[in-house]
Length: 204
Image (cartoon, rainbow, N blue to C red; front, top):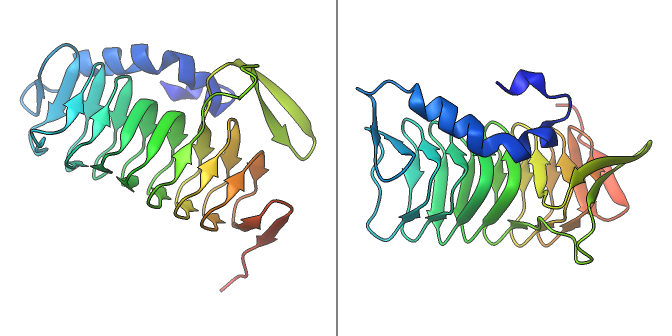
C-alpha cells in the first residue's frame, strides 16, 4: 500500500485509513479485535497500565510495556518494542523498531530495527505553526504538512535525549549522537555529531 507514494512523508495523512483497511483483512485466528479498530496479535500481552486508542495494529511478537500510550493511528511491527511512558501518535513502526524508554513519536515513520535512545523524541509541529519543509542539500521540499516528525531509515540509532525537529530525515544505518538537535537530512551511513558536523562511517 505504501508503494503509491513518492515521498515517505506523503503517507502520514493516510495512516489511519491504511490501518483500518489492513485491520479488516487480518487473519481472525491470529488477531483479536479489542475496542474500536484495535487489532492485537495473539502473541502480544498488553499490561493493564497501557492505554490503546484506535485504529491500532500490534503485530506478532511486539512488546508493549508498562505505561505505554498509543493514541491511535499506530502500526507496531513484528518484534517491535514500545516502552514505559512512551507515547505514539500517527506512526508506523516497522518490524524490530525499539522506542523503549520515555519516547514521544508522532507523525513519523521508523524503519526496520531503528532504535531511539531513552528520552529521545520527534518534534512534529514547528514553533511558528507553519507548514513543514524538508531541508535537503539541494534545496527545500515543500511537504504541505503542518504535522511531520521524522523519517528514520533502517537500522538508524538515535542517541539518548535527542530531539528530531520537524521534517528530519535520517538515512539508513546512520547514528545520531546523544543530546543532539537534528534538523534537515542526514545521509545514509553517517554519524551526526552536532549541527554542521556529520561524517561518513568508515568501512569495515
